[in-house]
Length: 320
Image 1 (spheres, rainbow, N blue to C red):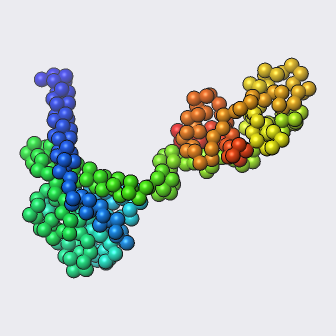
Image 2 (image 1 turned 90 degrees about the vertical axis):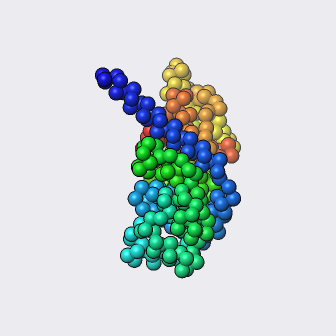
């Protein structure tokens, strides 16, 4: 078989795997019932943290679920079941809740953690594919994964089961997030760095308050001095009430080159300049500048300028 035939075989395998897992996710969605609601309600009632645990592949999924919960407003931490048996059980307090994952529900390494939750009456939510398993029989809330074949074809490699568990964890996290009305501002608080933090930055976080401004009756000699001193290549023009009446850019200077120094700022400025609010996302400001091919935006609150944002500020913040 030539390379083309092999490529097609690979694609057919990939499609089979993806569609098998997609079918299983449909079964998972259709099978959600009162147990899911109870699980969310119990997590909402927790005063401490959600302790997420699992062994092997379930452990990898548990780490991701814990991270997703923590970043969306639900304090959570992953605890390795083997480490729990060697001292980390002390981290699981009576104020916490345990979310334990096991495809079979019979993972031996989970025994000490399960016993600890029963001894100290720590709420236990179990996720497994067998309703009669030890984990789900011991759990206060049992979330049963629907019967679905693993995508590997021989039922040995955890594939479909881990995908369903991951999706169930996401479903819990988002249900909690929406109930708590967790906003982009909250999310940014938990993600101050990196690309995500930059995307959620507010204009007010990046803007400069030392603005280039002149009065509308100022001579252009003064406006040129302000443009040169401030280094933005523009100056805002305010009226007698301190409101932003216009902006003077390089283009305005070129259009009024003849007799420029005999004019006032009001005669040269472009009226009704584009502005943005300080609580707008910096990403929106960047999009505005890029779409209009401009390098600066004045930030206005109540009609009065309160800052200026340069496209370089967005670049330094990591927005692109």
